[in-house]
Image 1 (cartoon, rainbow, N blue to C red):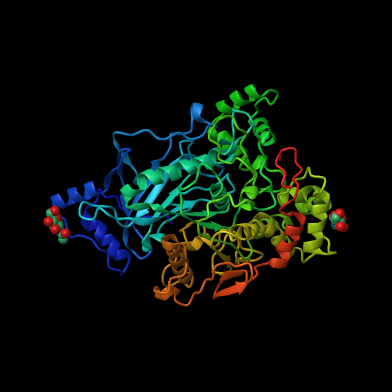
Image 2 (cartoon, helix red, strand yellow; image 1 turned 90 degrees about the vertical axis):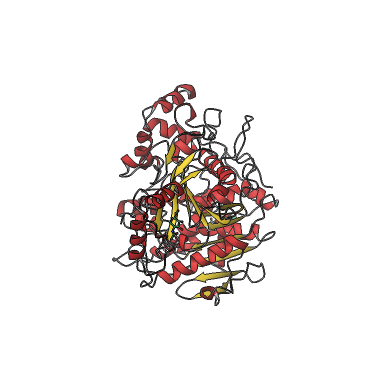
Length: 586
Ligand SMILES: *[C@@H]1O[C@H](CO)[C@@H](O)[C@H](O)[C@H]1NC(C)=O
Ligand SMILES: *[C@@H]1O[C@H](CO)[C@@H](O)[C@H](O)[C@H]1NC(C)=O
């Protein structure tokens, strides 16, 4: 379902009529059909900012309230030509009116988006119900900045297909979504000045600096910024919390289904991946200078289309292919300067209020894609020692690796073969714990020593899901299934309405997250819809988490026996052994 766009060029009367038709809810709109009124409305939709004028549009929220949308605004110079593989640069002022009435392009990625992707993709979208006016100059709403998921190689902040703002626009916040560079174009790291890595993450920093400077013009409060990230976006947030570049650019965090604090170590470069990319694009890999000039000459669509061939096993293992890197020091501004887990252990992180958790069945998709394919399953079962580190993200080069693989197999499968009939559930749990659960568990424990953490498990099972298996029913509550109650994602579900059971979850989630954005606490007794929810912060003694399902209940000790295995295999003082990992914990 394409979102209908009511361009302001149409008369105010039309806008009001459509909004009223869309919903029985009262819409505040002015009955001004005179030419003078139209002009006023037109100019209302053009916002003058320090960077230039921006034309926005009015859209209807889920409940049919009008909100302002400014989409596709460049927040950095296009990272093209000499700027490819380089940190982002601030955008220049413009002199025309920038047309922000539709989504900007997404960053290069594979799929059927040819006319919708561009390397000039560093764009921000801003949504709010109220703009400052001469009469009301002091609009100051809490800001929620959404950092999109997609494994650092897919998806976007676009409104039309993935990050529809209609639910959040029934809450009193300002929402920001945006794109950052993906894949090789966003993360190539040679360990030399040619490509230092972390470009996509530095894009995020640039966006946060942009928000600090410009968001008050849109009625946002630069001193109340909540980061909301999912998957790779959540991993990003756990990095912003330790990065010297992101200090003081945000005030609260919502970290959903991802964290950098798991078992996988960050490398200092990924030259092996750069070389693999170069070979796929028919570039020489003999010497770095020639390889780089060849990589610089390739069209962005060649990068996008080669993505499926970058993976090592099955459709998309390892799930996190491009990793953030601990940057070598060439005098540049470095995003990550030491192992992030070390920073957390030493209390070296932004101690902001945290809301974090996982879904009940997270990475069922990874498990099913192996079990469904007999050839893949056989390879997996017969070469488990070698393939497990790829799938479950640990270091294959470490002498401990074969022992870790066997310990994991014993813990999840006992004496059973990987090909036995009941393999689905243990494999779902193994993938889930490896790719999100354990990292989030450790994040909660590291952070809760010095700040407030609200921990959840999302187990609400609606009609729609990202995975239907083995029949046309949802398999469970998998990765991204909770996002569908925060953002409208038309490829997965139409927008829920008051008539849908699911709407109760939309309503509760957006209310709790908004309360958290206001004051760092998702509880709000004065809100009738939240009155029955008592979400206690995590304590080491009780290990509280909120189980968000059909019922919303406080429970204790999420998946503890499962995570014990990982804690034993990857202790915090574990001496990392890869040639890439120069930092020792001991
Ligand atoms: C319509 O516009 C006129 C002129 O700008 C203004 O005085 C009047 O208040 C507006 N009408 C309404 C209903 O707001
Ligand atoms: C792994 O190593 C530990 C410690 O050396 C040992 O006790 C354990 O039996 C090994 N596990 C397997 C499955 O080989």
